[in-house]
Length: 365
Image: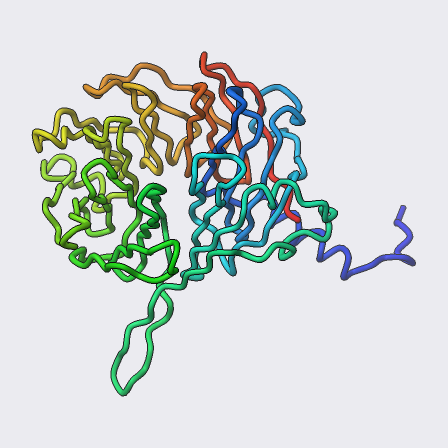
């Protein structure tokens, strides 16, 4: 028996297939918790591979953990932040009413919007995207080549902020880190020395320094007064670890800014910056793609559906299953609630006790 093809719409069918593929391949590259007077987490912001920034209310997401049947959830607020993937999102400012939502991406831009304007917009969801103008719009410089030709605009892979100093720092694809002044929207300094593009960056504000991690296999400490590199950390100095990776994909500082965690392929190392020494180094089953300190412990996610918790000496304390088969982001709310985001547009919210609160899949707008 054959179906009736009288009303068959080939274009609609192709569009539905493409939409399905887009949903399945959507990747959450960064999750972030906005500043709030509420001690309990309710809102989370995501930066995704389609260039979008999306805000979700956790209380509106069905409870439970599911890696295959996670509900697809519409965002409460949406911005088309970048042409190409959005790789990072940060908040500039500690007060809810005057914070800026900052993001960077493959288009070489750093853009910033008023957070309260973003979440309180009355524009219907279907019309959101470019409904709010950024108040910060920074573009990486192009480099001059032969006969006056210009290089492509290098991408921004990560950003860090120093709210007190009025600064944004970016890790760019031209092997440089840039220090931007928020007020003037101009570059204050360029940090040169890496031999390949930068993956990650953190601001060590207490020492007026930044730390960068690169595809060249090193992390570098930079003095923001002189612009010079004051220390090179070779996270793969041991020959046993060199076979595991050749790049520093993620770095994190603890709250005291005395301890540094470096993720390099299937290797995680912890450094005492005051003593300039590596205190622990461990092998992992899969490549590490993001790392963060939570009190005196280290959380790491990567190319396997697991969030691992380590102590400062490298001992594995726990491993919690996560929905994304490959996770690119782990972020911790002050309450201890954790968000893990990654491939498939999947996000896990994990309670401070290690149990799954909810899992959801981002909906493409």
